[in-house]
Image 1 (cartoon, rainbow over the protein chains, first blue to last red):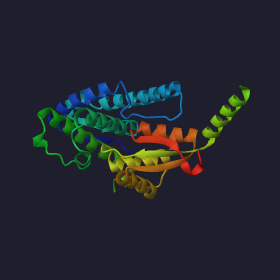
Image 2: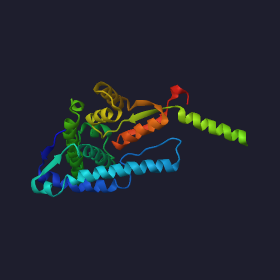
Image 3: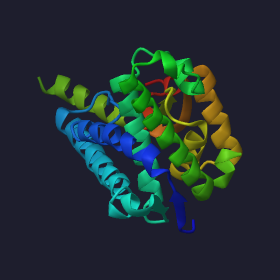
Length: 152
Length: 97
């Protein structure tokens, strides 16, 4: 994958960062998805969770660093072979958390198809849904470069 | 009683050596293209196999993506969970565990 610079609309994306950061904070406490290990001792399961959390925290740190001073100066984020996998994983974690936190009442089919009546949602949920869609778009951009055949 | 203890240890060893499945469960969040990419990168599937399993997850709610010894099944499940797919392991009934 070559270095890819993506120019974003600062006015549109900046408001989404608060929602994303709040989800990132919550993800510091537990992995984005639960897990169950049959017939394993507590220590083993705890170590498993700890390792997942550590990797998740590293990935989320990479995602947040995309939106630093340079982003606020010119609206550009840079994706490259060093950060792409971490960012695409972090986007998945945040989207899962957003679903859990904000979209519990939306049915799965609406979430899968993206066919959500935004006007029917409270303003706070609209922002959360915009963040959810934005992160999916970012994932699609990365996947097109990491594994083009996956998007065909 | 020593005899009972030996039997218990034997049972444990046998179960660990049995075959286990890695099963990926559907979620409404992760993109189809993302799931295909993860299957290719984590499990080494080619494009056709990755798509087949992704569609199975999407349409049937679950797909068995790997079967083998428990330790390796756990390693695969862990790697899939690092990519935030809902992956579980379960005994492979066909192996008689």
